[in-house]
Length: 366
Image (cartoon, rainbow, N blue to C red; front, side, top):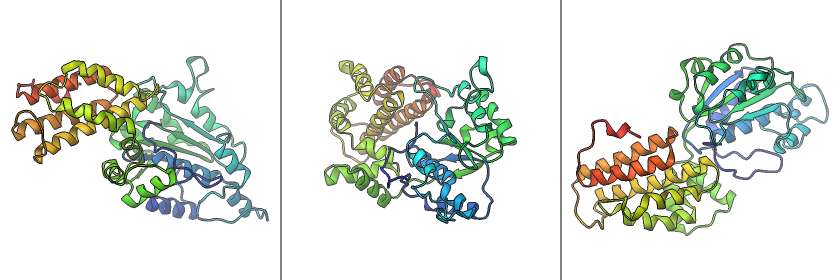
């Protein structure tokens, strides 16, 4: 999952959800009034729990307890607040990831865009396979079928257009949830057909509850710094507490202090460090994202007078260096090739630090 928060543990049989109380209440009211929409676009910063919320909602909607109580089954537990019971057969299948009425798809790690085949099947099996074909089948267990599309930011025009008919004429009892970082990256035709749900970053107290839940260990100063740098994201919090990132920080700082960050073949060293995050592409991209965060923090320290640079630099150059870093992050989030991006980023950092003139609009070059 590209932007989902790391697993934060859960009570037996239930999705564990941190924060987002206003959104929970919004869905509970709609559920109680029978006004629940059929398609949603969840948007917000990476790692704040949008996918986890989608899981919570899906489990609640599929939970058998409410439907059994409505049908007069004495074994059912009445619940109007949408929370899953965690005990019924449906909840157990959900937590075991074997529920036949829940279908989740996400962009493969080796692809830059969302493959249309995941939605409508391969060319030989168009509309007989894929997520939309599954969603059109009558529910196997309860009264609903739920589909979650993660990484919806990577839907291209072809894959997005495949969704239009389902959004316009949703199968009976179906719910479709798209999880994305930004509504602006969705086609207008998608935005207009979905109820847009905006998620806020988690608070400091909520992040600390995640720390306790995950039993994360760190020195108090490191933990406070990680929570501050996390910007309300569980994903960023976990990344900032990565001991390998802490070890690499000193080496990065030494090269950022020079006027030539590419010296000593540092681009190769940085790429190797990024690759060591694992075989999954999104993990490598997240690590590079955190490295660039460290660079931005470093140069902002210069603006505050906290610098051991070998030569003083005028503030405009430092601002330019920060802009180069932010542009590199933008390119990274747009799936730029990692090795090429690292090399270009370090080269241009050196150029702006030395006061060399860059080509106009060069900050969009990656």
